[in-house]
Amino acid sequence: MNGPAGMVDFHVHSGPSILPRRSDDPETVRLAAAAGVEWLVLKAHEGSTAERAHLAGAQVVGGIVLNSTVGGANPDAVVVAATLGARVAWLPTISAVAHQAAVGDDALAVHRQVTFRTVPMLNDGVLAEEWYDVLDVVAEHDLVLASGHVPVPDLVEVFRVAAAQGVRRFVINHPLFPFMSWNSGMASVLISLGVRLEVGCVADLEMDATLQLLDEYDPSLLVFGSDLGHSSFPAYVEGVQSWIERHLPALGEDALTRIMANNGRDLLLR
Image 1: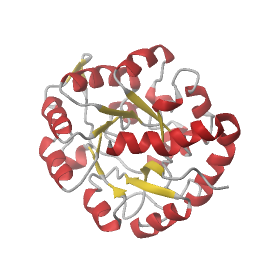
Image 2: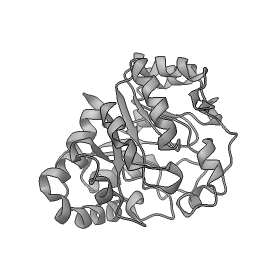
Image 3: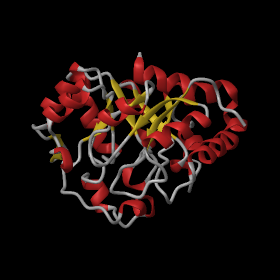
Image 4: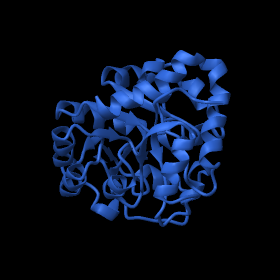
């Protein structure tokens, strides 16, 4: 089954990596094209994919994950990544306090063999001062600020401050993973900030997260991010096609096109 034209995958992992990946960058790009994906965002917990994306293809996009491996709240690292073409800045993943507290959860099983130093975001519910310079760089370069593995209650404060600093593109990755602490009562404030939610293959492996989120979020605010690439997850083409087959009957063609193509392109490029 073919997906909508112009598909965007906002969240793909490939090699080289310290985690086991199904394919390297060139092969991942080939597989994405075979699945009908037009724009591909490479993510690496190790740090920046801006350089790799530049080499991988004209419609391959990179970003930077602000784990301890790049110094955490390091505005210089974000400047360099953005100058090299990055479009996304992810908040900490493996370095996130919530990730480390939930390392035994099934949702994080694929990361258990990797440990980074902790990179906190908040002090007593207030954004740590060192993050303000990072947010200024994200705003200056009009990057997408992505949640990483920072839980949603903390993101409400982070995104509120970021919006006041001039950041205008926000996305929450896999919001229904248990360690993300999603609460439907937060949907209204997130919507008011223009926050998009990522839905996709890995997030739907154990639950139908996409359809649950549609109870609170309009399809115009959902973006597709497969999160595929780890050797424990389904192969790329099969994973994407299976997700389409599973969700097309419930979503319909118009909503599927918005989620898998239009919304991601607008968030990434407009």
